Image (cartoon, rainbow over all chains, first blue to last red; front, top):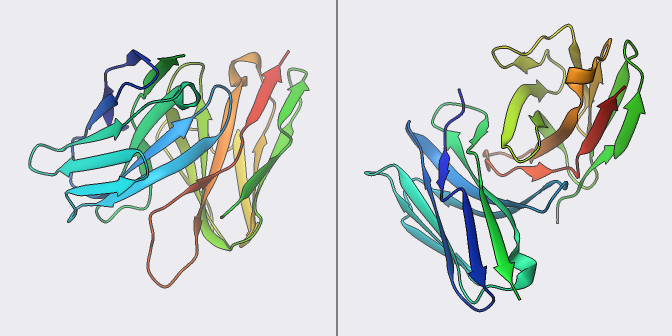
Amino acid sequence: SQQGEEDPQALSIQEGENATMNCSYKTSINNLQWYRQNSGRGLVHLILIRSNEREKHSGRLRVTLDTSKKSSSLLITASRAADTASYFCATGNTGGFKTIFGAGTRLFVKA
Amino acid sequence: GAVVSQHPSWVICKSGTSVKIECRSLDFQATTMFWYRQFPKQSLMLMATSNEGSKATYEQGVEKDKFLINHASLTLSTLTVTSAHPEDSSFYICSAEPRGPIRSYEQYFGPGTRLTVT
């Protein structure tokens, strides 16, 4: 079964504002990954955080992982209109060989 | 960076025909490739895991005789939708995990193939 649930389902902000998306999962994981998908396109890998890490940065992206709460957050700072996309979290499960995706958060950044 | 291509990018076929979709890792080898299906405004649903040189592992509810997967080499996996019906219309995306001494768990995605069955 699929796991990984993003919150909120949709988010609309103004350019320059920060966007925060959350992801919750159900089972033990090896890692958690965030992806971006522009409408009708394939996925772009943004960042991977391992289960023994708590925070990771990449440019304007900041990801946190709380394994005790089985949750992760993705923060996009100083958002741009080009950040408009759907964002998915995906978990790589311990002992497993597949990545399961959540339903995604649709982010709209208004110029 | 690692690039994955899919061909074709879109296809329209008649009901009852079969369609083959190719997924290639262009600049890396992948022992494992994944096939996903995505409905509009929904998440990706894993259909099967394809391992080079062995049979694919299908997710529960996915008909292996309908969705034939062949992972013939370390850079190519194919998905054939047999006897396609309108309900098979969807966006099919593949991904590949680079081969290495230690699993990276990173996946590189293809651009997707939009299948429309009329």
